[in-house]
Image 1 (cartoon, rainbow, N blue to C red):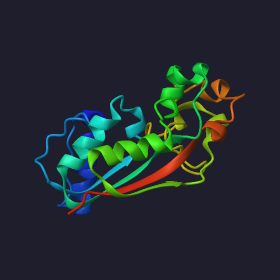
Image 2: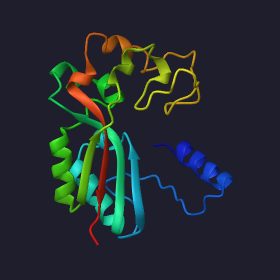
Image 3: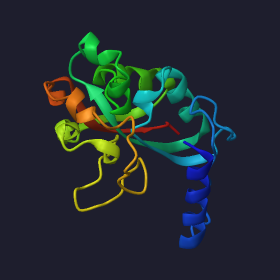
Image 4: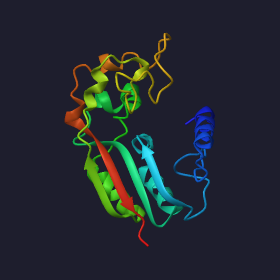
Length: 189
């Protein structure tokens, strides 16, 4: 997350009249919020990129009010990644390398104190990275009809780190290793 992203989120919230939303730039393991400050925490393809997932879930638990909810869209593993993927920067960019098994996610949430935990396979095709690649490929690839994605405002003539991701994953069936999951949990009252 960058300062520019925070500024854009604040402008969009103001333009939409959303007075009940705040945006903070901080590590997920050390959020600048008081205990019990949030009703809901949402995350899209972030937790798998955090090295200390226990610390992230404990911090989310801390800032949630009793009865508060967690809703995450992320990647979880079915089986361990081969070494060629597990340590590859392009696999981190594609949100695959930092993923952990579903059971590990559930256990981390339980250790943090969460209840009503559900980890649901979204049945999404992770092999989208074998597509055209380029700057339109990231955690949540934009539909073909859409010119922008979470990585920027549109295709760029400049080469980027994203270029070559489709080649990198050409001979790998990502669906055999991982799944897009929806994770829900509740902080007990």
